[in-house]
Image 1 (cartoon, rainbow, N blue to C red):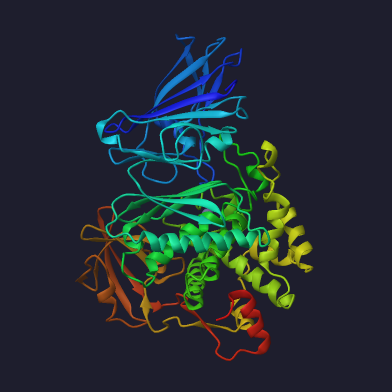
Image 2 (cartoon, helix red, strand yellow):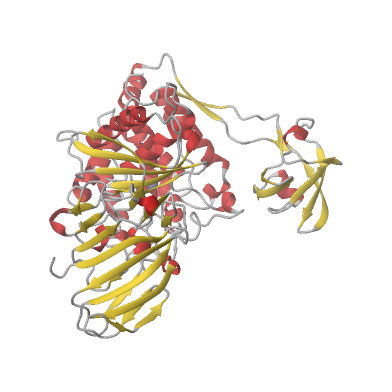
Length: 598
Ligand code: ZN
């Protein structure tokens, strides 16, 4: 293909975790072609400097070696050359996460942002990738899973794949190996689900059936009339490990990592909390296909992957997605209303537990995601609010307010669909990127769609730190808001982690008994009133009452210290949400509109 950028990638050394990559530019910049690797990857808001994993980059022009000069941590410039210019390099791939690249004898995985150098000034050219089969004998049965379009490759085969531009190239992660594969159609669109890792007795038919319901519900949510999905095919690629959780969204796929125990076992019909968590993760990443991959914050159009892209709107893109991920499990019939309400209560309790919500709005948390939410430390509970969890409650509070004030005629669903129609639906049409959403656009759209004046609420709930009025909003929907905190239970107000036989303090809650006593994160608790603390303190605490003063011995660094702490009542919120059996007719109507017939 004329003037396309050509890449090849091959798993070159499984044991050394190296992919060999080359990129060929037929008409390089006459002043010296610049190449660059992203410093972060869309969807994960932290500088990761993937260039640190590039090993030995060299350049050649017409087969003759030419100089490749490093300009900064992630940029290179090749010597002037008429072309074709080729750059070869190895990428060290040993990050078992959804964000970068991983390679060993069991599989290979990469995000384009970790392995493909962009060709400066040529980002809008067609990009071709020849994904080559590793030469190792053990890899001869390997297959390829990706949502990238095949040019000269069979479905699931090695060969040449094509992307319209660099942005698309790095938005289709690739998994290779002997993965478990299932397929289904959602409103006519083929979907694959791929599992890497050993999972005995995996109930694949059940996962497929549940995912189909969730995907069809989400497609119909955004396009109730046409039920038209925004992509031609979709791939869920899942890495199964003993204990991890995470996902990264892409325009036609998602990469997930999950705990083996969360996946359903053949012959067991109940929905475990772990399986509900897994489906919630799939639902979340799938919802992003619309919300953030097509409806985007203005700061991401286009993505500048060399530096931080600041947006105050992650509460909408991550928080609203977190609100709808569980709601879609309910609407698709995968979980019950009681199960859904327990998830809302859990999110509410999580937010109320952290003092960070008094100091940071979800808009501020969005903006500072790069240095705070993504780089949490021992003080985060006291200083940072999650734009995911609190953002989902802002969505809930807005949804309930709109439904109540319009007597059920409008809801947050209408706002999401309007965002979709105005910003998302045509985002990738005609080969050019659409426009992004600003704060002012959000304010205007909420009022336009609902006929209400919601700016004050958006300012106080999303851009301020005012408590959300869920305890008054939920009862108007026939939902009981019952705080059953254990006021007689004494607490110190710390979180601990087990380290061998040590019980180490990982966080100290502000204004807690531990804070007042002077205990700090990192202290290793040794004894309480002369009795050894072994791994956890739980069984010791049962012997004390609120108001008791205890003596704590702890090591700070390697010095033994003594603290006196006066135990206070546990004020950890423990909200339980249940449905009112005999709500008013108005409440019943509103509840039906929100949760369906329950
Ligand atoms: Zn997300």
